[in-house]
Image (cartoon, rainbow, N blue to C red):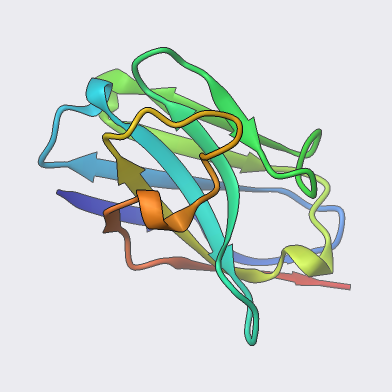
Length: 126
């Protein structure tokens, strides 16, 4: 299993970025793909998740209405469109995957995920 994130960078508050997670080495349709982030001195937190098999999506309250997760199963790629970015969104963003069928109450538990990408830095300036 290999996950490669891209699309991070420096953006001003109110701006947008689109992160990509290119996956390989497994059957994309059987997995849930999640985005987590970790800011300096803080714990890793769930941002969003999509189930490739049934298309359910989940979002942290802090990003609802601003971030959108989508999946292109033909390309084995998941995207995270981030709009109206805020300085508090600054973090390293990680793509991760699990074969466990997640739900609204479990998707943000990092312990359920078993493969992680190397991360991509997102910095939002005020």
